Length: 161
Ligand SMILES: [Zn+2]
Image (cartoon, rainbow, N blue to C red):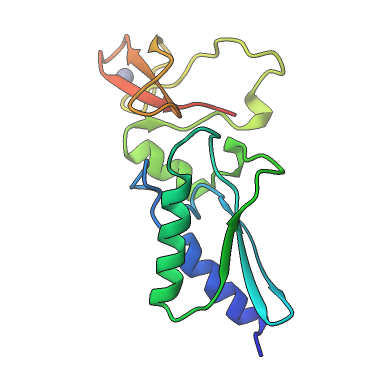
């Protein structure tokens, strides 16, 4: 018999898997673990991919399956596309880890205009808002490259979605 505590423990295991593209964040930090549910005698773990087109989806599925297997948990893992993931699902600790890694976290939805304007991005090094976008794509499609005019440091920002 699977209890609610078991489902929570399974969620912990799934959430502790590192994101392949952002290895300082877990998929739990990114808010990708949508649901851990029991359907009859099966346990279903549902994940939502972050940016569509991020090629890491298959890798994440494989990593979660092997983490569950290592914990002797028998569960099915699948990706659901809807509702679509947004950067608002990134947890507070995930945002802190982004900042600590020198990446400006995405602005929360409340701070974001409905029309996409070029909002000033805060430098994760010195918190200056005098920053300039150098490129729409950083080391991955999920990030954009900026430079801080105050401390001259280039940095990446996680695009808000
Ligand atoms: Zn700076």
